[in-house]
Length: 274
Image (cartoon, rainbow, N blue to C red):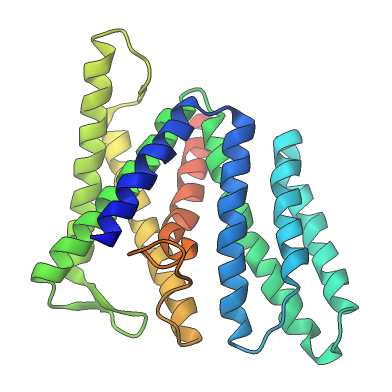
């Protein structure tokens, strides 16, 4: 029930932000989520013995989003400069025995929860940006919900027992089907709205393109989920935090998006080029 209530509150707020929020507010909101997820990620790494400079990493994430907002074509350069800055900061942060671990963890955090989440405001800036982000969210959420209930009810064969003991092949396959159903429903809604001259949802490509993309995003989301599970299991914890009732921490809630978001962004870039 906590899981359902939390989702019932957050989902409408997220969709309102996607469709009605200005670019600066969307960027600020995503940066805030990235900061919360980074705080949890750094807390996990401390359990393995690292002592990363939390404030410096959060500042780097903030600068990454701010720099990308002002100079979107220079995101890679900004990321590189900030990574070098974190290396220098960690070099002079005692003790010297921790420099390697602290620098590696800091840059990984900047990449894992900073650079990946930049894909969301970048997608919003596309011609049909809000529709793309809605597609991403619906596909990921539909797959997650379907996997949860099918896996609990009929799951028998373990998918990756060493990484996530509760995940099953049955739930994984159902997750793909759920994402396809969610994508199909969204495409149907867009077509229905078009009959009323509404362009709130726009998916101009062939249906097969979006369905194939839904499968790709689902696979990326499942891998992202397993990757975060592996990180947590490596330090012996079940959840990254307790901020979201029924969901664990912020990192637990967005782990799928950390891979699915960039996959959608690069799929759109490649599709536009070719």
